[in-house]
Image 1 (spheres, one colour):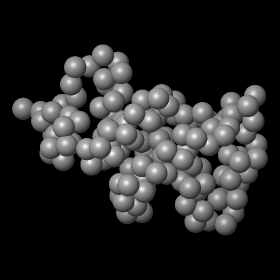
Image 2 (tube, helix red, strand yellow):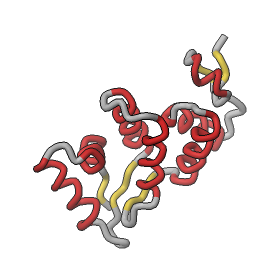
Image 3 (cartoon, one colour):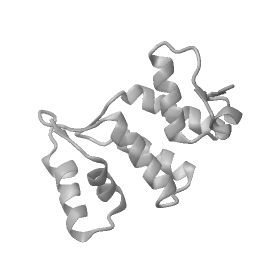
Length: 132
């Protein structure tokens, strides 16, 4: 299995550097096989979402669509894929930020009864409770 760093995944998604983007596409679209898939861990996924949202100003709906497409990419294995897929659904339903929703959904998957945060938007959307 080939693990990806965030910068490789971003070059693949953004196609913003002729050399690095071509390498990233080659790794993900050509080098990956069923026997040797490309792996994206949760930290890379959340960092990618955060970077797309903050540095590149990609809106929430488009970020959710990008992540959904990644989850369906042949040869790409995403850690906790079911949890991330559910987080996309919840984010679409509530208007919550996807990175926050992944955190909350992972906590739920591990048996947490709630996730507390100082993030007022996350609390308003209902995915987390305000820390008091």
